Length: 184
Image (cartoon, rainbow, N blue to C red; front, side, top):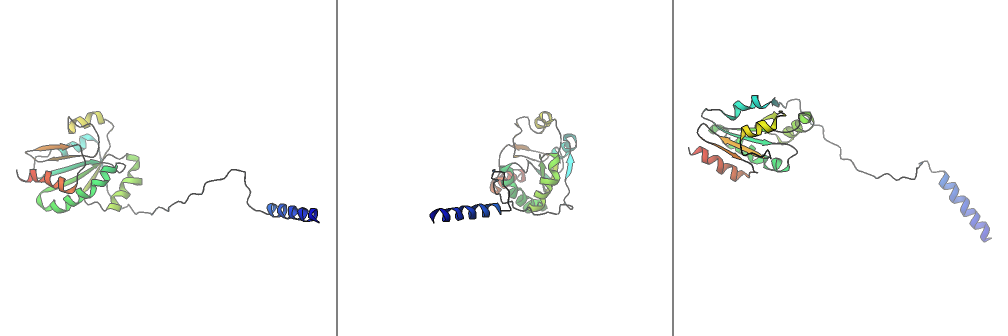
């Protein structure tokens, strides 16, 4: 009797395992949950692409404005973290003869995949320019002779004064630096 129960149990187990529709090669595949990316319409986002020679006139204007030029990239965490400070400054001082320009150092091939969606998602109102120039050893030194090339970096200037910062900014620190130019 025990042999018969054992035999029936074995046949039942084999039958059930043979009916399995999933075939396995013995290698288990990890289960990953993929977050579905939102599609962002970037058709209305305009990013001008400049080489250094095209950008240089923006770095050396001699009019009555104060220029705040931030060098950044979407892949730079400190750059992304300080971006709200520049946007807030742009909004607060745009009617006070201050112009904020965001110079992206993102890779040109990433403009549509990363830069434009970032601009749209963050609703950036400052002008964004992509600097696409492979001669960084030349243009970095032209922007500021002491710049190592690290980002974030910011140039604040007017016709009388020029100051370069290789650091991150909070809004209060950025506004404080801007005020040193407004007092001139």
